Length: 212
Image (tube, rainbow, N blue to C red; front, side, top):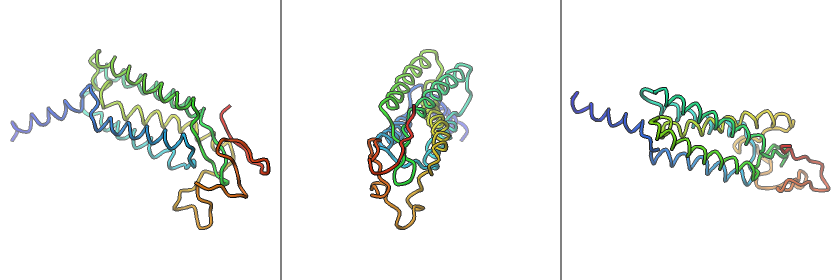
């Protein structure tokens, strides 16, 4: 039994330290980034839970994927990648448009926010290639992909959260907690109207809270 289990363990350890991201990891990363871009480019209610759940899940998944021994090269590339992800995440958080709709706080990605996402993706690919050539498997493979993505979203949330609180507007309630008679997120109540392009209705006094 010991002889037959050793190759399986060795194979699992080799897969976890592969310098090429696994298909599942790539799928998770693409799905996460795609969902964030799609939902926030069109504008979405800013919910405190939604702001944190996805980043925390991705960070935990990425951290638990860091199995086995990490070399000094692995650690160096992981720290550098996480640092770049955090800086660009914080920059995205400063560019997100915050605005009032239906009496609650909404957020929307601006073109510059999307551009910062593209910059992160390009830099991550470069970091993976450099780490691969340097022999830093954990720093360039699937192990660090979800972790750095989660760190980037956490940094974005760390900037958006205080900005949202500074507006004085309430965070959006979840659908199940929204209550009977509350306007649906897709509708604009005639008594609480703000155009989705960020401009005011001349008959109503609302404010957009956009980054300066």
